[in-house]
Length: 444
Image (cartoon, rainbow, N blue to C red):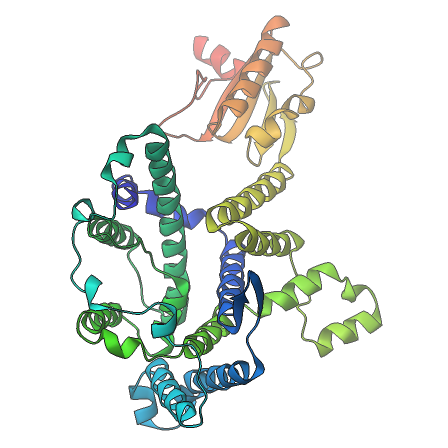
């Protein structure tokens, strides 16, 4: 269902709405996911006994820490070595191989850590997938129950939203990293098709996860060939070499993902938010403090608020709510800022017609106080209202119509002149009306 809904989003051109997401939301998105990914790497270091969760015993904990640090160091520093071989072989693969060798060396000392085989063993039972409706483990009759159908639809919509938003935002992040252009429509369509096939074969849904995408970029992936090779490699290993996966220490995966967290988190945003909170520019000591810690001198507190809001909401709830919260705050900020730009200049032309020239945008945020600029009692019989363009929303249209009605009650006319005509308008408008002076000239 989620895959089919993604196809609907693609057909409706929904991918273009990614352009409405501000950069501050993107930063909060990266920071929030980095925290979520980093926090999820801690669970292998704990265990549950008799219903109580505690840290693993110090011997195993120390061995896991050694494997984690080793894999993370290889993942981070091997690509930086001045050697072509180090750049040719994926550092994440080297980290996993080194961790497996280290795990086997620990066995010689009578020590061990949890591996994938201990946590979630790969077996040959699931090598060949089959349609979910042929799998006897599922009760297909539940699909037609109202409660179950409602749950399926709700989760399908939520998965569609999460998949589309995260994939398109991840695409933007990857584009910044590798400077390779992306096709948002192709991303959504291919993801929808993949989810349909995966769901029919009993698999999980998926999307362009920022963690795996960052690993791909850190290993030298720059184009579409890299993820194709990755997918084929995963397919080959799961289908024919799954026994090797059971040997991988869980701690090595945590080490690789911690490096991903380091590269996903936008560390510069911490200085930006700190500069927004502390007014260090007001005093000389504060300026020295800001210079010492390289805090930006000019920051936008609203952007800092958006970063913090999206980050916290991602961690506490989910990505959909986080992005919506960030976009709403950004939209409110923009509407408020745009409403402050409205100005109405008054003049009288040689023929005695009063002209109100509106500078700025007339829209819902400025419509309620629009009447305060006019003086219908003292204005002459003929008044012109000059707008930059036709009002973009109903609130603005209604504000203009109300002023025309006010002037009409006093036996006066308010004509509207648009400086930049649009093809499609809202409501009934007077277009290009002539002033009283030009009308009398034409009749004479």
